Amino acid sequence: MKLHYWVALFLCSFLGFSFAEAKPILKVQKPVIVAQNQKTQKVTEQNVKVALPQLEKLANEMMEKTGVPGMAIAIVYQDRIVYLKGFGIREVGKPDLVDPDTVFQIASVSKPIASTVIAGVVGKGLIEWDDPIIKHDPSFQMNHAFVTNEVTFRDLLAHVAVYPTMRGTT
Image: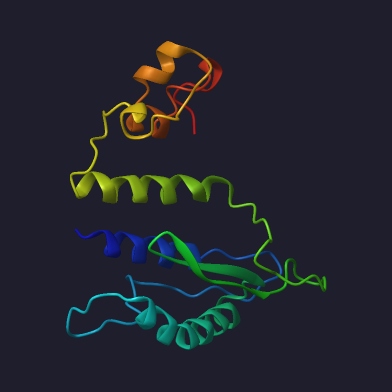
């Protein structure tokens, strides 16, 4: 399956998240493709900028439908941030707005994000699960030289390389 399918699946499951005071959540039966161009088209910075008003409308609609009080969106194109905006409030019942610097506590949601991104790179053949991380990022460093040289992407995602007391736990 293509990476965009997994990203869509992740987003659909993420949109099912609800806060205690929020409205009932959407019942997503299958991944929803928000927008799909019938012809494959090269993504350009101009294409991205043209799509931004639709993105803002979609963000506001999804917040209203799901009851999520706030979110931030960043669009990165060719290693540059071309869009960064906060929507809504930080917490239900409080007036503080979400802005581009709002820090969200995403906790374990970072695990499927990280593994999805790495799976996409593995799927493209750019890395292997069992490649040492230092092979692709020479600046990577752990507390011991042996671990720095040997730890793999699989090791980090499986939680078997960082702390002995956390081995194999999530």
